Length: 304
Image 1 (cartoon, rainbow, N blue to C red):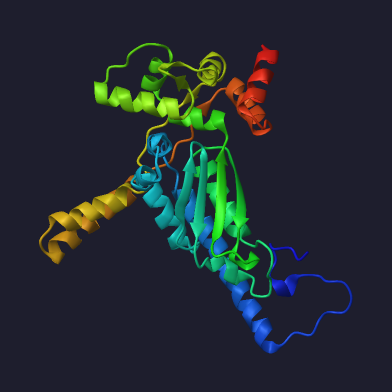
Image 2 (image 1 turned 30 degrees about the vertical axis):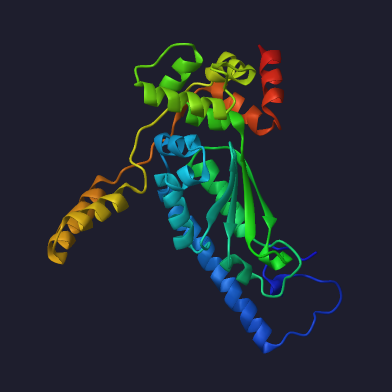
């Protein structure tokens, strides 16, 4: 099977090299150049896309596709991938910690003009994995499940989150108070929303701590990580949009936008890394090697 990570003209079939026309060689060279440009875009843009836990938390707690699509993180993610050159991605299916994204007319398929009857979108798969793991701090697996080059109508990608990682980011102090049987200082509406989210993620069952919730509170909650507070990468864009909406003239809006951008650049913010204890690092590494939540908990109990 031809390696999907290489352009067609770099494959190494047995025997003599097959004849290649000038047009096919030029097409392959153009595709290879486009692929290099995409990889450069990813290298340039990803370091600036770190998302604070507050943004990821809102995304994780959204319990329907419509609510997920309304989050700032989702809009940023889709715009970010489109601007990089990964196409018009959209979320089409959801279950807690499981997401399926589709990309119609996926431009990545054009990188492999000579390949058919196989899934080829390695660049998109890797970008999704990197975005969730590095920018959102969510351990995950990513798989391309359908591909246009394999005869499907659209390319589809399945993202499965590692539960311990998702719980660690999703649960704030008020959620942990609820799991501990203590009412946090929030109104009834917010309390119901929090209880609903904890129930969706199977940490609560009929208003009481579930077996998974009890296990998490007993063992995984000992994974102490200090949450760092910083601005999300979409904040500047939202500021500029707000300025445009509030100014009646182009000149006024342009001046205010220029000032905002200059202030943002002068601050030169450094995205902080969370402070992680050695014990937590060991647990996180163990979680990456474990297929299920139950298996990880069994290992944690054994080590106590």
